[in-house]
Amino acid sequence: MDPEHPHGVGGVATLSSRPEPGMKDSAAAWFATRLELVALEAREAARLAVKRGLLAGFFGGMVMFAWVSLMAGGIGWISVGTGIAWYWVAMMVAGLHGVVAVVVGVVFARCGFPVFETTRSELEKDLLWLEDLHRRIKS
Image 1 (cartoon, rainbow, N blue to C red):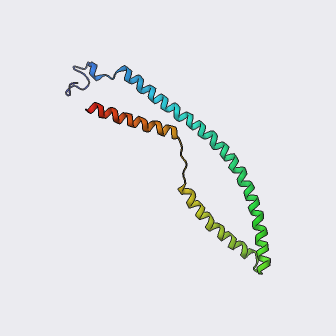
Image 2: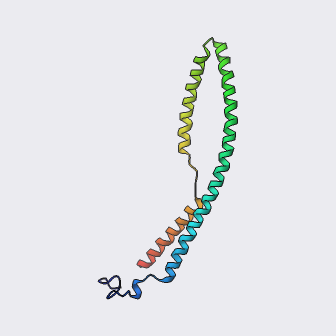
């Protein structure tokens, strides 16, 4: 390719200035397969998220009912046993719950779960392939 005329000589494109038709088709096919893979994994992730959300909601409701019943009985029992008014015992229990919630929140924030593993793996392979191709072109 002539550096003075990167788009061809005299306004006419030369063969070297046009992308190869096979490369365009290959690139389009590559993008199409990657987009299809992302869409497939997104649908699967959405389905699993709905299922997990429903199960977590039901589980959470049952645990909350049991916990509230246990706390109400425990606060009454501690209040009668110690002679402290029930509302002070309830405030102490609420404070304890606040501390535990902060600790659990910090632990939960540090835990992550992998999303789009297959797509990420394929893109990493593509990057390695492109780096290898670039290295071969330079040499």
